[in-house]
Image (tube, rainbow, N blue to C red):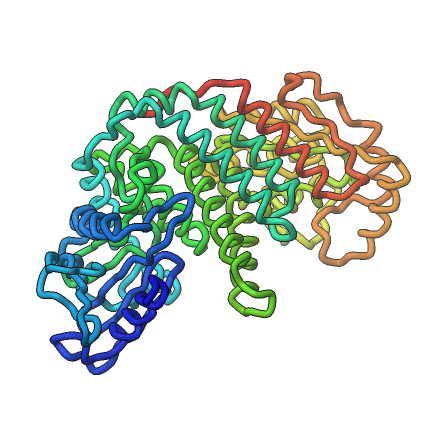
Length: 531
């Protein structure tokens, strides 16, 4: 019988309740591209497939035996109650059988024996059901900080920054090859531009963290589905056992997997609880920008894996459509996380009425998960008006302008302090208003995107929105023309913080130019190491 036949016979045997001494009522078989898992009553048995991939080698029996023992050893660090040990699988004339221990004459395969747990107790399931709580995230943060503190330092931590850069490049190149029709090449080019800028800005910080011992033998696959809130407290299972290179990483990269999962589930509040608790007990994940950079990296890796999974399936297979959909969602998440990694930065999208600033700022805020602050909305709120109510002429006096822009600055500062990127949609045509905004903003960085459009385009836009009862702006055609003439040049802003843009083209193109400005600014400064 060939290797494939041996595997088929083993899978068939382990799928029978009578195979196991404890005689479960039934056995469920779960197959992945690298293993089979047999759920047999209160126990589970994981058998590694005899496969070899670029990132993994299970090609020989000795290799699989060794990695079974390594899986148990490594996972007992964070999940001691789950991993019971290794069991040899032997074959004779009657077929396959489960040996009593890890060593048996003539063993033909090996399995990791685990305690079975309730899937509903995983973080992934609790996020889906709405049961995840801040208290559990704080418990998890403390557990992970202790784990990372005790983990063995990587043998060559100084190589980590270069390894990270190579991994990022290789991942994006792989996505370009397999993500056609799912992840657009323009998205990947923008991601590559941002990654390059961030690594330039943070090179010294990454090297400093490696020198301080932040690169350790971590978990390597810290996903929400691998976190269990069970009878023995919080445990984390299924770490990467087959590649030390995937585990010997900056602790922030390890933690960032959960930051990504929580952001993807729309629970960034829980991410703050997790990271806050991790820091409180002495964990060192760097600042929020660094964490979000690593979370973005994780999102792109997951997008690649989803594309590879889709490529293995037939076009009519519903699992293929699900994998492609997952890749698109992860690509969008990666973009939002990149915006977080650019913080703190307030971006003012300005220009006269009907210049396209509101359309652009809303698009950017949605794509980047940023707070959208509108001067029209803030002005009316100061007067006790709803956004769609028309404001009196007195609402646009010099005094009211100054109050509005100072309030915009204070609101932007508050959101930046909480780690959120901010898009400010404001005409900003007078220098005094811009000065009031910047003064209230404090020390946070600010950049101005000046929206420009031909007079005919502006007139058409202003006329079109006059008939919209839900509009927030009170500006009509006449005011749009007057504001164009009144706009005072942004001479006070340095060239690197001022981007004039034509908006009479697809908003996606304009948005890409804005992100390019942000990345250029990022690469021009070096961040101080965060401690």
